[in-house]
Amino acid sequence: MTTQTTHLTHYTVQRGDTLSAIAEMFGTTVEKLVKWNRIEDEDLIHPGQRLIVAEDDSPQDTIYTVKAGDTLGAIAEMFGTTVERLVKWNRIKDPDLIHPDQRLVVAKSDTTAA
Image (cartoon, rainbow, N blue to C red; front, side, top):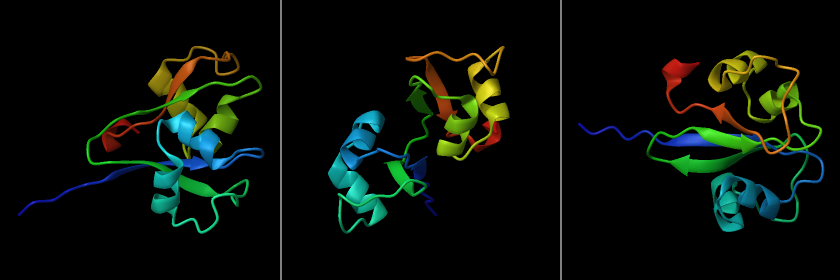
């Protein structure tokens, strides 16, 4: 018996996002985002919409690059996780102190890492 597990990474659309910007952020293509999310009009996405942004058969962590104005709370909400997990995964000493261009693990492929 063979079992194949597909790992999905999700992202919550923010105001001003476009599929091309999201694709670039996650190193994928607009075509893949459209396919994975069954999007009929690639120019029509909405803030709060949860999208599959990566689909992989091999486990991997998801990395996010902090932008000016980001907070751990907002990042946690974007990726469907908690501030506590972000602090733990990234060994953050002060949750109120993150910097633009800082790279954070925002999703762990290993379910035991939560």
